[in-house]
Length: 248
Image (cartoon, rainbow, N blue to C red; front, top):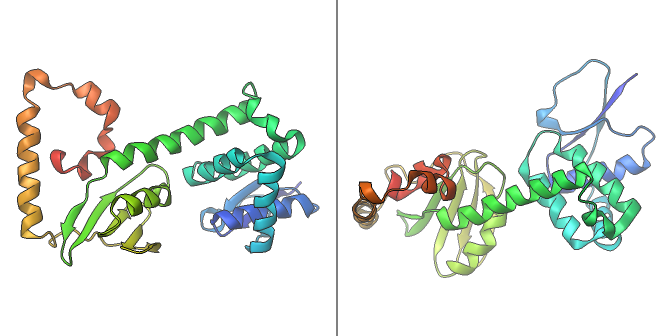
C-alpha cells in the first residue's frame, strides 16, 4: 500500500495549499514535508504541491471564520517551530477544528490540542526571551547589527518589535542558523537570505570601546559571592551566551 508524501516548498502559503489539496485529493497525505527535507522511501508516492495564493487565502479565511484567529496564530507559530512532522500535526489540528469549530481550544484533554498549545508557548516564549537578550553592535555604515541562532524560526516575529523600538536607526537582525536576515532602513523591513556574518572585522572604534566598557561593568557587578549561575541559565540559556556582549 503506497504512502502519500505531499511535498511543498517550505513556505506557510505552501503548507496551507497542501492542506487545501488534502481536502479535495483522493489520496490523503501520510506525510506533508518540505521538498528539501524529503528522502526517498519504500512505497512512497509523491504528490507535488505548487503554492497557490488563492488556495492559501481560502484556507486562511476558513480558519479565521470557522475556528478562530487564535487558532490561526497557533498554527503559524507551530509552523515556525520547524519541529519534525509539524505539518501533519497542523493538518490534523485543522481537520479537528473544522469539525468542532471554536471549541477546539477548550479540548485540553486532547493530546493534539495540548501538543499544539505547548509548541505555541515554546515559540512565543523564545521570541519574548530574545527580544530582551538580542544585542546590537554598531558596524561600518552606522548600521546596528545583531546575530543570533534561535531554536525556532522567530526572526519575522521579532522584526515588528524592533521596527517600532529602533524606528530611526538602520539595523539588521541575522539568524545565522537559517542564513536569513531582516534588514530595516528606517522605513520598512524585509526578510532576505544572508550567509556571511557581518560584524567580524567591521566594528567601529566607538563600538569596540562600548563593548569593553559593558563587559567591564558586567564583570564588576557579577562578583563571585553574588553570582547565581542557575538563575542566569534559567533566564539566559547558555545557547544564547556567545552573542551576548557581556558573556563574550
